[in-house]
Amino acid sequence: MVKDVIVGLSGGVDSAVTAWLLKKQGYNVSAIFMKNWEDDDNDEYCSSKQDLIDAVSVAEKIGIDIEVVNFAKEYKEKVFNLFIDGLNKGITPNPDILCNSEIKFEAFLNHALALGADKIATGHYANVAEVEGHFQLLKGEDGSKDQSYFLCRLNQKQLSKSLFPLGSLLKSDVRKIAKENGLHNYDRKDSTGICFIGERPFAEFINQYIPENPGSIINEQGSILGEHVGLNFYTIGQRQGLKIGGVHHGDGRPWFVIDKDFSNNNLIVGQGHNHPKLLKDGLLAVDMHWIKESAPKKNWVYSAKTRYRQADAPCEIDELGDDTAKILFGQKQWAITPGQSVVIYESNVCLGSGFIEKAININE
Image (cartoon, rainbow, N blue to C red; front, side, top):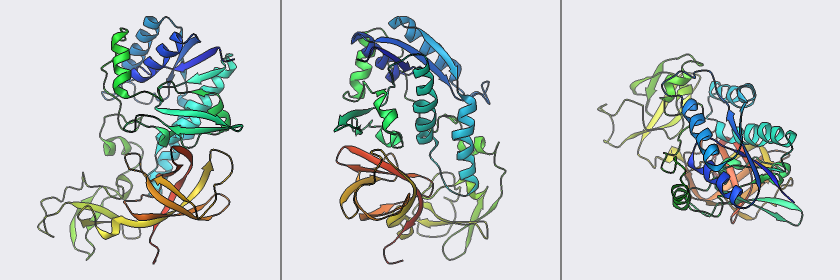
């Protein structure tokens, strides 16, 4: 029987209500505040000090102990360095997925188990179910907040030791619970963006680790429209930050990044959200991770996301290698981006994920 649960308390309303619910349900609850980043604690964009103040305040209100644990070294090695390495290769990684699999459900989980905890709990909007001896990762009931996408690389052990008390709740319910029970952060704004970058400008932050390498922004005909600061700072489908809106070329529609020419250091752009180069039939993925520890059958209709804020798209797994997959969609998908994760579902069950290596068209 589960008795002792350690909650990852971040300072936000979701983890606060997670701890409150578990305490109310009779668990022996304690908390850990994870410090995962410390390179620029004094930066105007860094919120870790306020996060800690809020987490401690919540713990005191609920009546649970809280410990601060520094995982900055592990984060740097297993998440941040891989993120920078990916950018240097010209792809667009998603560090939040690795943060979950390597830090929150690995370093934190191991630390909690060493302290004698039966399970850990976080404020993710997702669910876990045990079916025929296997643990499934399920979508959260609140479709607008479901975070199974970010948990797509968890394994059987990690899921077996995890609780997600918010999985059956709406975000509005969570804020209501927090307010009714005197949790001061009930209306705190949700955090956005990459965890270690926060609200600061992306290029400004990345420039500390990757030097600028200016080149030309060109259209498909080769006409120079402007200058980029370095191909590593841009992603497929990007519209903002190109600074070519006033250029007297084209038909007045917005410009989007459609490709990168590394051999000539050119950023290639096209006009219109549905530019043909942004629409692809499928993708090749590598480093596939299956939550059930066995690959699903191919030539079966599943659904998948190639980015978090995207509706599930029907797809087939056309080919499966040892750790690779070729995934084809029923309809062309927009801005499939190398380095991002493709997350595969069967109904509301997350089956696993892989890293996008290449977007493809059937006729190519």
